Amino acid sequence: MREALAGHRLALVGGDAREAVIAHTLSGWGARVRTYAVEFTTLCPLPGFHRSASLEEALDGATALVLPLAGTDDHCQVYAPAWGEPVRLTTPSLGRLAAGARVLVGQARPALRELVTGAGLSLRELADDDELAILNAIPTAEGAIALAMDHLPVTLHGARAVVIGFGRTGSVLAPMLRGLGARVAVVARQPRGLALAQALGLEPVPFDGLPGALRDAVAVFNTVPAPVLGARELDALRGPAVVVDLASRPGGTDFDAARERGIAAILAPGLPGRRAPLTAGLNQARVIARALLHDTGGPPEPASTLAGAEKRGGETGHGT
Ligand code: NAP
Image 1: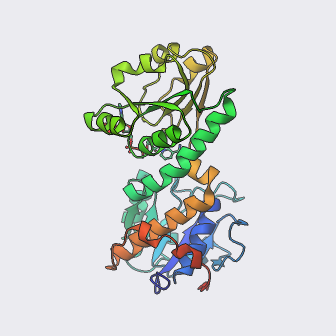
Image 2: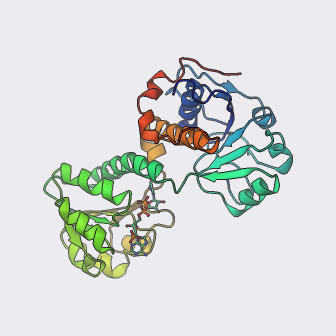
Image 3: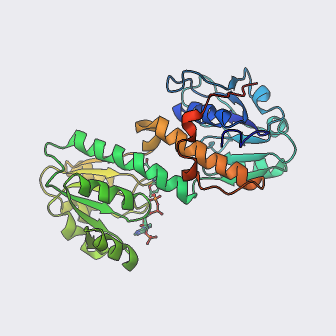
């Protein structure tokens, strides 16, 4: 993997502490990396990449533009929370990229999609990448458990925890809670998910059993991006309990109803970047590298086979 990205000229624009890790790692794998509006981080003391003075300089001749998972807003302004000024993508700025360049992003809003395709470039969305979602489920689950612990006067060990949804995040989180000694119920709508939960020693609960499952719960984790925890369900909670809602905004909890009932309910977006930016950045770098290699006819290596390669990242920084 060391030189696998040789020949790739990448522009990394915007993001948070993860992007510095991504830039560092990809340059260690042979790519020439320029960044703009990337937050400097002590996670990578030897950057190994070039920090451009302007957006245009970063984009000039790049074969791929790598945007943060959070992407842009509806006006193509790039997510860059720690950057002092707005960073906006325009048709002339994208025109700086090499012909046929790709734009990689988590999920593209319609305005970005229009801009990219209008400029004759191709778009690669990573948000639905199973491998990235499963790898990100690990820091998400750890972060969710940490949040619950911060709000609880009891241990999770011996307590009842309810995980709603058994997709990529729920199926990583539930066994982790069980490993801590919690009594874990999994609420899912598919027979397959319920059977898998049972096979893993978790209590399977169909959705109509949710209020019953909540009755003695201390920690409730929602991963379903639909309204599943309304007033009726919240009424079932007794005693000190915390709800950690992991689903994308606006979550699946009626937060007003929770407030009225004095229940601590937290919407917790972006946990991988907030709780474990180094891990999350490395995961993202691996998946970006796989996407770049696959799209250019290289081997479609699973990102997991790149594990460990990041330890060499930065040794051969190809900063320009
Ligand atoms: P996923 O693999 O698609 O899992 C979602 C689960 O929700 C599946 O079990 C799905 O059931 C279920 N579901 C969806 N709509 C439902 C409905 N209307 N009623 C009942 N169940 C429903 O997604 P994921 O990767 O686990 O992510 C889950 C959510 O967390 C997403 O919103 C994602 O954006 C978010 N997320 C947040 C963080 C964070 O830091 N907070 C990190 C990662 C992901 P079926 O299998 O039956 O469809």
